[in-house]
Amino acid sequence: MTPDLDQHLADAATAIAAAADLDALRIVDAELLGKQSVVTTARKALGAMDVEERKVAGRLLNEVRAGIQEQLEARRTELESAARSEQLESERLDLTELDRGRRLGHRHVVTRTWERLEDLFVGMGYTVSEGPEIEDEWHNFGALNFPPDHPARDMYDTLYVDHGEPGSTLLRTHTSPVQIRVMEAGGPPIYSIMPGRVFRSDTADSTHMPVFHQLEGLVVDRGITFGDLAGTLEAFTRAYFGGDFTSRLRPSYFPFTEPSAEFDIRRPDGTWLELGGCGMVHPNVLEACGLDPEEWSGFAFGFGLDRLALMRHGIDDLRELFRNDQRFLEQF
Ligand code: FA5
Image (cartoon, rainbow, N blue to C red; front, side, top):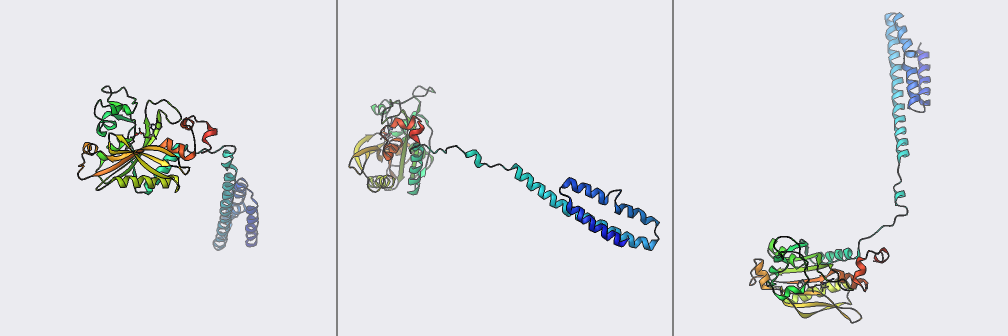
């Protein structure tokens, strides 16, 4: 019986190795360990043996059976992992296929200008603040030292919102109300910029849009002077436009700054361009925000983001930025 079983074990190993897939292995399993198998038949024959003989033969049979089971298990694991790999391979998706023929877009030139300016000022130690586009009269005008019914309010063609008392709610005409919100939210020292969308009922032309973007800057601290303002704007001009640009301030008027100035930049060809307004924060504005003008002083500036993008990229008509003509926009 012993040589037979040894031979059987060797034949079993060959049959198991030859099973090409899990179905074939199931058939080999039934043949080797099922009812008709050599092992089961031999086990039935044990009953006819005497005790000693049965002990020896029984142990041997158990070893053979365990050997077959072990080989079956090993082959099953092998085939299962092969089947899994095959499945993964067949289900693989080439995602790069999806990209074929599709052109990648990029952010709008105004968004990129906005982000560059944020990076630049954050690099100078400023935080970035935001405020609502729908404002109340107090933040857009009152707290900024525009007296009621004062002609200064006509500086901006304001779009009012039909909400609450007539004239009490509006689309902000500039980013300066965010100055008020920043001062209300926390005390000095304040070094913050406030980019955002603003609205005026201006007729669109090459330098005006009814919806455009501004970037406001506000610094409030002890001992801030006009020299700090001029130095900051000069540093900004050189960092943003390049070392061959410079800036100047011209006297101007805003109700919320005193003294006030227009901020111009000089291009390498010697021509000057107006970029925005600026000045020392008016004592009335500090007081409206609960700050003592004897203790704190500050400066503010605000310029047009869209016009900045125009200048930087040599575009001659603001309206082009918002026509959404792909052929135009993809150049920047
Ligand atoms: C203001 O809006 C002031 N709030 C700026 C300011 C802030 C002064 C802080 C002092 C201290 P002004 O109306 O000049 O000022 O607008 C500022 C800039 O916005 C302009 O120089 C211009 O670049 C841009 N701008 C104004 N109107 C339009 C428009 N319709 N379309 C595009 N850009 C505009």
